[in-house]
Length: 108
Image (cartoon, rainbow, N blue to C red; front, side, top):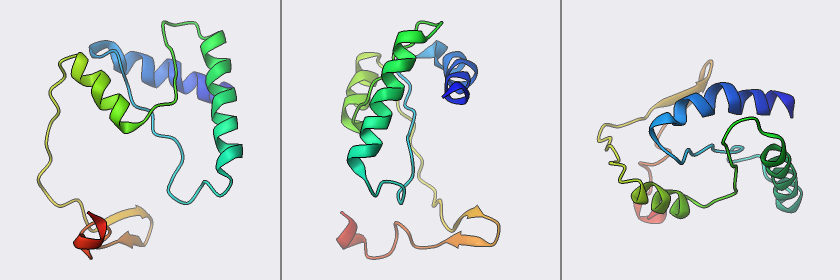
């Protein structure tokens, strides 16, 4: 928990000076076998940090839609990326290919 708090204070707080809301993605696509346990652990961590933070930071569990709505209220202009991001490598000698581009009708 201490490492997470240090990460918030050293990485997130300085980066948020231009905006009020910052997204902090949690986990990965294969990590949540027990959703109840994971959400309870997230709530515990969020509550602890909100109670003990030294900066004007408030963590909350949100949805992508809530985040976008909050950013709209700040009049943030979102950038667009039109290039292809794949093939993609996240580990040495491990590549992802066609993750978004294969079977596009099934992934709408």
